Image (tube, rainbow, N blue to C red; front, side, top):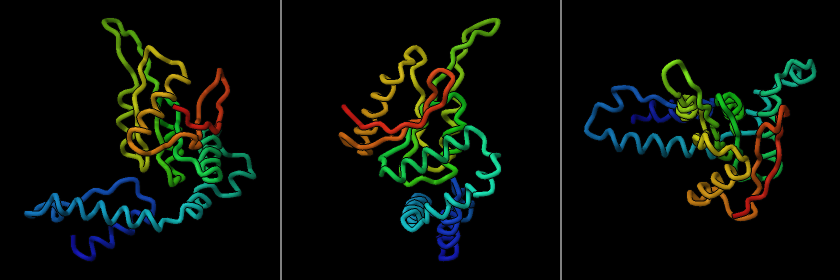
Amino acid sequence: PTRAEATDVANAVLDGADAILLGAETLRGNFAAEAVTVVRKICRQAEKVFDHENHYQTQLPPAMVESGTLSQSEALASSAVRAASKTGAAMIVVFTRTGLTARLVSKYRPNMPIVSLVIPRVQQNSIRWVLRGERAARQGLLNRGVVPLLANPTNSDMNALLRVVFARAKKDGVVRENDQVIVIQKVGTTSVVKAVSVVF
């Protein structure tokens, strides 16, 4: 990429872009793979200087909080990011069916990964059984920091699912024993944000 393109990429990251689409002129040459590698390095460097606190404040204006116009999902997402920041959490895990809460968490740009654990639904239409949830998991890939996982539809035990997430995160080098993880989940009809210690 040219110097101007490199600046554009860095500014896109600093402006809070979820993804970057490279133009044909960047990828047309003989060094397309190298161009993508350089763009990735630029993004990683820009992420290191990204002002997470300032971004959080701009996404959650005090007037919105004081007027009570914050939706329940928005309140959960902002609270989870704040809790993760204050506790030094290694990651945020969001139990979801649609991916909406994970997208809202991503909006606040936490400096740790967001695992969007999509709990699929098995439904029957007039002819066959259909698994709903794969699309929500795939769409999570478009949001910054979101790592979507599709849960097993036959095992809905939250603790078992968390153990699977922790094992995967340990394998990827994201968490260690006794790290703090912030979890957003529904317990009955109540949505909860809680801090959990990683135990293998």
